[in-house]
Image (cartoon, rainbow, N blue to C red; front, side, top):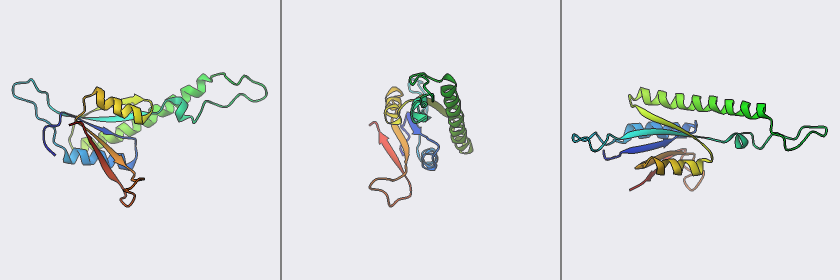
Length: 156
């Protein structure tokens, strides 16, 4: 693709499809070179991971304490354990993504946001003024006959 891309976001979730999309983007997309007059910066890749809030990751809040305990009490240790687990998962996903980038000798920026992926990916694309958003697809829709594909969303 043309070498005029300033910011390309690749959303990764740890799935094989998202990592394939990352590899595809690194292999096939050409970023903008820095302008000699230095008014235009060089293009860059951003590897984006959206981490679910602890309440979503747990499925719901922990169940009520049995035998007459209060039902609306938050259990800090439970939330802390889920948050720590999510951080380890996020670190592993980013470590794997950065290994792919390193093997292809491409430096990237990383960003982690917490929330609903449908909302947060769009917000990140808008906030970072992304020219292109690359995502892997598990092909659950009309493209079901393909094992995986790459979605490109262009802000042109």
